[in-house]
Amino acid sequence: MTEKKPKKLYMHYILEVLKKHTDEEHRISQQKIADLVFEDYGVKIDRKTVRHNLSMLLEADYPLVHTEHHRTNKCGAHENIMTDWYFQRVHKWDESELCVMIDSLLFSNYLPKNQCDRLVMKIAEMGEEDFLKRVKTMTSTVGRSGVNKSLFYTISLLNEAAIDKKQVQFRYCDFGTDFKLHPRTDDNGEKKLYTVSPYKLLSLNGRYYMLGNPKERYGVSVFRADRITDISITDEKAVSVRSLKGFENGIDLGDYVREHPNMWAGEVGLCRFRCQQYLMNDIVDWFGTSAGITTFKDGSMEVRVRVSEDAMLHWAIQYADQVEVLFPESLRMKIGKTLREVADRYK
Image (cartoon, rainbow, N blue to C red; front, side):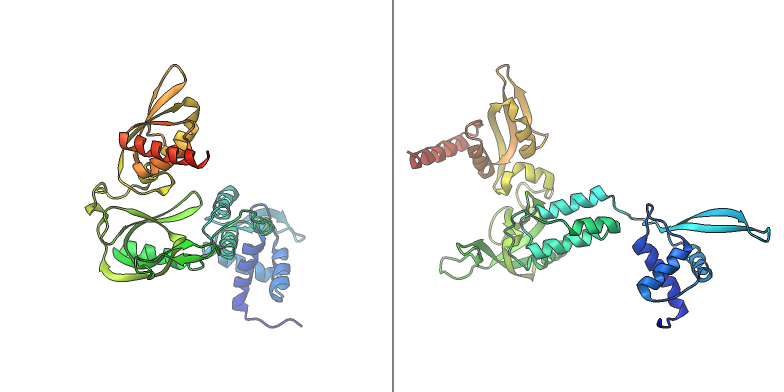
């Protein structure tokens, strides 16, 4: 025996059935709606009740779509038949858009697996029911080093502090040989407490970063958000980023990423280097399309970019067999010294 339910809930059950079971590719009749209400909620309703509630939902501007057919009944009277009902999701995401968001999470390396899986399911729920079923069968084979279970809390506080223009305090950690995070220490061996004015958060190359100004230090430093622990917001006002040399107009994330490959901080200046033209894909990947290029008949080219010298040092060493830095001279000397030391190790 089915449980007696209030009639005022009928409209809710009908609407939930349409949301759960229908879309443009899966339309159902009024009788099928009644059958599904019984299957899902154990409530028996007839087609007349279904039609009455559907009409009320239409009057209330719910996004319901149906097809009308005109016919003559046995008594010779004309009547309208409304069928092929479905719930039209006004803000429906395209499946390819959802896949892009899901892939960006699966290939991130800062989220612990359980948190990543939970977010993937939330995104999948914005798609159709068959898409959700397919996503549930996916397995993430990407190795991840994310172990900081307080990451979302950290991100939330960093965003709040940046909006309220407040400083934050936290411990900054490094991985030990036990693959666990350990706070950095000061000269006395005590756990170091960082005080920072946070400005921007960004995700890049599978990592999540915070750009901020550490107290009593000059310029903007880069912190990995997943290596921040024990964070709190202070009552102290943040240092304005526009008061820092080189950031008088604020931080443009696009420019910052191009000028700081691999997110190495440091003062930005002009750099010129020579390489072969077949490296253009790499140049665009690392420095964007604003790099200055001069080509030569021998297939080489000179590239001019504005970049952090520390970042360029590590980038140039990465491409040492294909790139020669021409300017500044101080960077050439650092690269030469580093490569000679490396060569000595491999004798």
